[in-house]
Image (tube, rainbow, N blue to C red; front, side, top):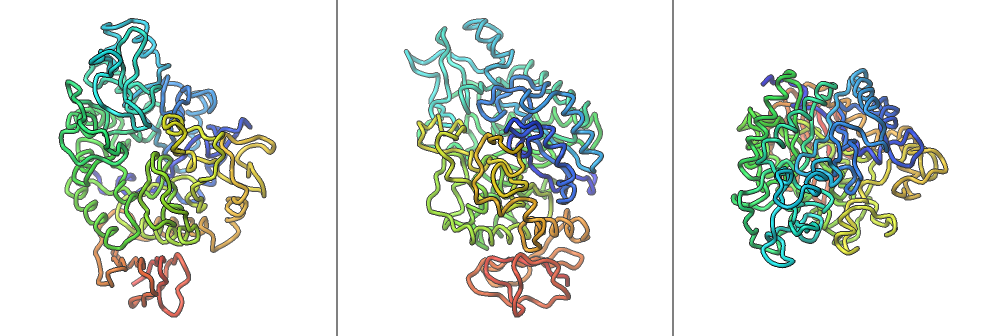
Length: 538
């Protein structure tokens, strides 16, 4: 493994296709919209893009219900558009990572249609997890869906099929050799078209325990990772054989094609198992995302992450927001910064001014840490969670599966504001309604507005990313903690950079330094304000 591999310290920008940019005037983001905004991403200073599923899909879960892994959904374009985007991105110096959804397909996938028509006990059903019930009207076991309700749906002939997510997302049977062979072929299909890697959706869930035993609890939080070694469907040890197989496929195309795992697991040591040298390359650090805004908690997460991942030779990968969790401007504006998952409701109103200050500081902290970074579209604009969407606009499966009691993830998926003084803010053509409504208050958050203000969140991201790219101390490598009060994080990156974050309630006098390289808030009288961060040349 080359220490200078691009993925060890890349900044990767997540594009949620439906909400990034609409190039056709349909109200839904698409591939032509992404292509039109590649210069923006190059100017922002990122190294690669991760594109959420663009495959043919009935969109029961925003494209994570895939009907055809080798074709593009007509809402987004055609296969030729995807190939052109990959080429365009490479010309802009950007690598392309695409989403892969291997745990489940859509009910519209040809395999599942064949399974239904073949009938009970047919071999076509073996590619999925079909079972008889354990009694009249009773599912095979007590497993629950992440989106609410039971994880089983009964079909007309009496058998039940497993879906850990929505009923429109039947789980595949990863004990079946045809399933494994099919995904090897899917990997090659896209690698042949030039993609640089894959983000693996729910990478911890593919393999289920033989016999499908009861979970044995009806109160487990299915979004929070369970800390048990014998869980029947999360983080099974057999899943690692799949990823060793995939790693061999990727290496047929050279050392720079990579995987990143979405693996919700209980501890960094468990996460490290996914990124051993013969498995995946990187994995999202959800412990960091979920961490409270407290110095001791953050330091503990940073140390445990770097220690566990470093032990297997893998870099850490830091992330603050994504399309499945409450945006961090809103999280950081609440007394509790947890409650990130789709079934969590806000515990208190958010102080968005406070959340924005903390988000600016968190950016400098994250970009100064060793390893790679993921940026979720819109966080560079300081966008908050839209928690006042009209109920008739909500589309997330969680909203419907919960009986309209939990609003779900739509609030972090509202289309981006690019320009103008009123919706659709340049996301689509004037007069077209975006698929989710944008708040009028975003007129001050557009790319066009922020580009002209040096104190804006967008300007901070651009400066920080430029410095990170150019400073020899930042990116992959080591860090060391320096002495500081208990509510201050202070660490050194060599050569010659200190990062300080004040998580306390009073200003903190800065240590000796040669120059302030970057500050999240103005440094006054030589002291770092509360909820602020700074990079110092030393």
